[in-house]
Length: 604
Ligand code: AMP
Image 1 (cartoon, rainbow, N blue to C red):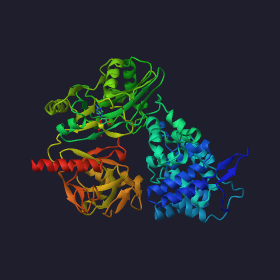
Image 2: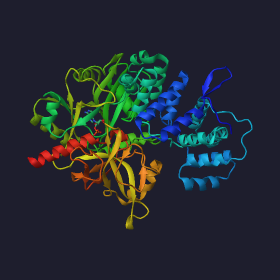
Image 3: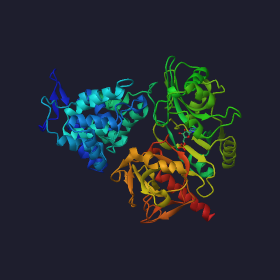
Image 4: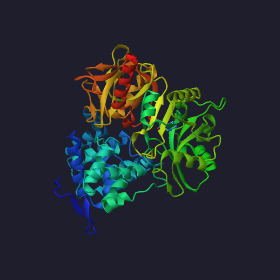
């Protein structure tokens, strides 16, 4: 096979096109580093080489996607089909592909190894261009219904026939949804700011554009084609999800009120699914907290919003809660979770699990961007624009300026079936901070004052094989908190209790898609797990207390030199937080806060 020295080839119009081999070389370099700065440098080089018209495609491919997440089209083709395509292209039997796969545990590597041995190189070997690869992957992703499998295999074989072994490694990982280069969104934004914006110091502006559009590819294209000017002109757009504003947490009502300047709004914190609804007179979109498109699963919510909203176009946010049709009481989160991800039987579900949305924010109304307005103005606008119905209500709230009243309101919230309260700043600067966790919103959940009676959301980063009764499955999971300062996952406990027998037996299967043969570059652990995972799955955990620990890396050196913080006696509550991205897990900083307030209580 010829080695390709140039990054480009020419198409029939004489325009230069980026070669996929260039991308594959960059992926290889990225894979070999764990340093964020180095990754950024490789990306900057790649973006600079990329023709501007396709920079969005290069960005999507690099994060292992074809579109922004809210489009809802996934590439992931079944391993079985990929095996067929590899067998076709390598000229070997499927059995042989399976054997190699079993040995190396990575289908991308399998393809690479088998293509290296390929005896017959296709006669008219065409170098793969990024555009051709992208178009073909689109065909693969969009093929549905009868004959779809053949279309997928045919297109993938076509790519592999023209691919070098290294290209095949990444193509196969990409189509099976396992590219995973470990590049965080923020790293891509850094690279874009450097490549097209004049320097890393413009990252914040680029990030703002991302927060308003939730579309890395689109941001890349605008900055590549129009520079910072284009980025500064970004506007809230109905139909493009805005990255949600997030809350910090604190454990004492005094501290909370001090943080927000003595006086604030306190609202019920409903326990359901966050929904960001976008409506125009003839279209509607519902986005989850992770920006998946939920529109088709909740037609009742769309209908309800159309009834309740007294404007033409709007973006509103609220919590969607399941309601017991017999008692009218709010049901736990698990119930509304049954309504997501369904393709069929939606009408029955609407009857079985009716929902109410409690609106708590408005981001846009008829041409006016409310994200830049302070919270009190937004709340006022929300009240003006919504006429509450049974299905669409407004969040319950009060204005408080003293800790006892805040505590009373918290009890009222809990008695009504809520998890606690959200305290929101009413300062003039209390804008909607898209995509950010800040002190303008502070959550205050029940039982903060008993030792770790509150739950934390932790990410599984590895597992230990079970013994005895648990032979053949995992005995425990290695759990981590998210360190937002270093953008890494730090271990805090081994979790082995709270799983029912069925879940326990299913653990290896549940984690199969996330298994990797080495510690993930963003995981920081002193403990050697038997199996490592890509940080993806978030579990709700409750523990007895927090303690200083020499073996965990969460908050290492913060409380005592050489020690981290660990959770003692952790137990799985049974709740998979699939609505949370790993970066939404409880942070190391929150755990330090919890540890300190626990100490304060002991001292009292
Ligand atoms: P947590 O999931 O524990 O980080 O808490 C934040 C979540 O609480 C938000 O993402 C919303 O889904 C939910 N929530 C419930 N009620 C409210 C409210 N009144 N204001 C803001 N968020 C709320």
